[in-house]
Length: 139
Image (tube, rainbow, N blue to C red; front, side):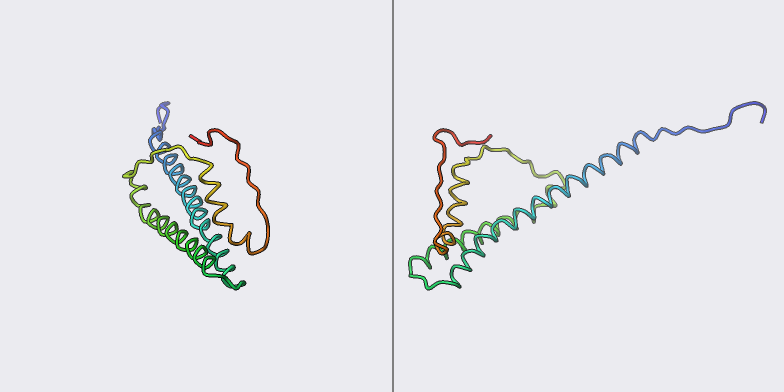
């Protein structure tokens, strides 16, 4: 071999970077799907509570109307979530930009209480809620 070293070197930096990007993309996809599953499950609780209330009690017209409104509102919410799910391909192709917006925690808490009120009343429970005065906005 004449005393010359034999060997070859290859720069695999680009391949390693591509593998890392792929791994990061898969992790973001998994996180997105976990969040989506959670968001799809959330409206089922008030729908289930409303259905349970309808099943277990003799209700007056007003209570039936309120319970029906909870079911309708949650079905609209689930429809919106499913529509968002249909946009996943757009998200994965980078065609959707997410705009962060502040959330009013007072509104979120009030909606959660509203969703559970029929079941709370049906079971003759009482809920006291005290929200601290002032800003309840979360950036």
